[in-house]
Length: 253
Image (cartoon, rainbow, N blue to C red; front, side):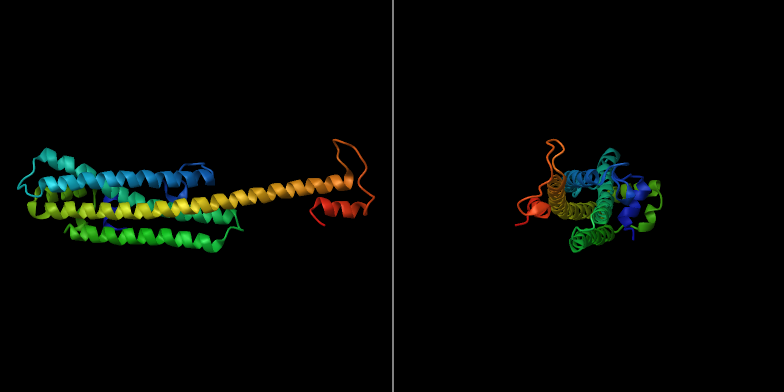
């Protein structure tokens, strides 16, 4: 379900930095998607933190001003729009993370499915919490959701709220609250993504080690049975026979 703020972003035409469906870059492999996801979350966290600080500065600056110059209204509108855009992008990153997690599980059936479920539930919980926080913030700003049906109406509603001393502070406070919720959600998402990426890396490393050991064991067994093609000798048939030699090559006693 879209939040009012998400509807606002869609109306403003702010395009998320990631694509829907879990693929961050067209044609990217799954390991590349994982790296891109973690990097995108880190970048969004830093960006949201900067915007919250900027809006807080504006909030402190204008809270006692009766009127604002039109140029200043435009100046303040920009970071508010960007911040709401990041809130929508944070929700999309949560969806991407769930999709990537499921992709990894589908490609690696022996990876602990319970662990994958825990990660996806965590991402879902984070995005749900952000969704609720954004709804609370837009309601606290006393803005009419119907005023955001189009891009022009959205910009007009924000400009009017900033120009009106009675609604200005509510709008700025709501934007700060939305920003803080976004930073919190992105921070939790980043921690989860890093933990998941580490677990998946360890799993792949163990799988590769296992496969390498299997190849080495198979090679040793083949040489025990048929001899070394690089050093032609008959297969071992004495001292316990060929089966005993094969057993020794495979690690038997």
